[in-house]
Length: 290
Image 1 (tube, rainbow, N blue to C red):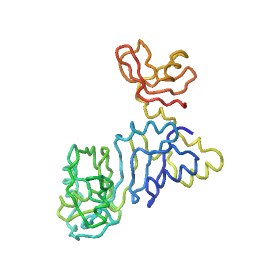
Image 2: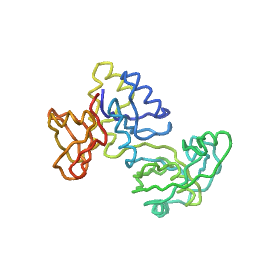
Image 3: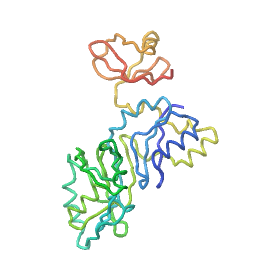
Image 4: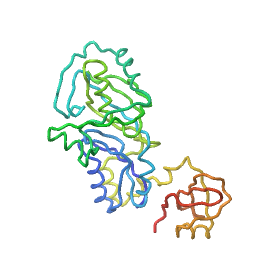
């Protein structure tokens, strides 16, 4: 099996839980994903199966989109509602206009300090391991870009935010910082990823559905061809002689202009992502089964 599988991750599953379960369902050890979701979060996990795992590196940097619930007046150690409450503030005076004015400060390129409860390593130790043992260390702020934050409604007392952001953005830290900016504190009460790059929840399936379809022998029907990831890249077809060279990893002469290409066999098989420079095409990453 080779291709991309869109999973609608359920709450309390880790991303690694999803991968481990799929390995058992699909009887395939080569499975990876392009962006971790915390156990609390639900939504889109883009999973790569078989030879398609070679494309993970091209998808990890994709922008993400989330629907987040912001709870004002509550500050926790994890920056979400799974943590211990550190402070209760008064958010009664925050209306939509006040929130909207603060959100403008958090759009665009900025530096964000990662939370202690994260998988980032400092001096060889995961931050969450340090935090769980009661410690705290300095964390270097990291550059992120928040493309947009839109208020989409309310859920009881929580504000619903539609957020489009770059790789590496911690939405719970964003919620915490928004609360601080309002002076009442805040944390994230729910998170659902709705997009990653060009992929959305359309067509995404839950693990139980994958199991059912696999039991019917139709699991491959769920897979998206890996070349879809590069659909914005120019396409070319290799002759049979050129294909032989490509399969051996050899550079090939070409009259194509410089740039990157999706390279296909005459039979339509996606062979590789290639790069042409001064009349020579070299392999960036191959995707044919060896």
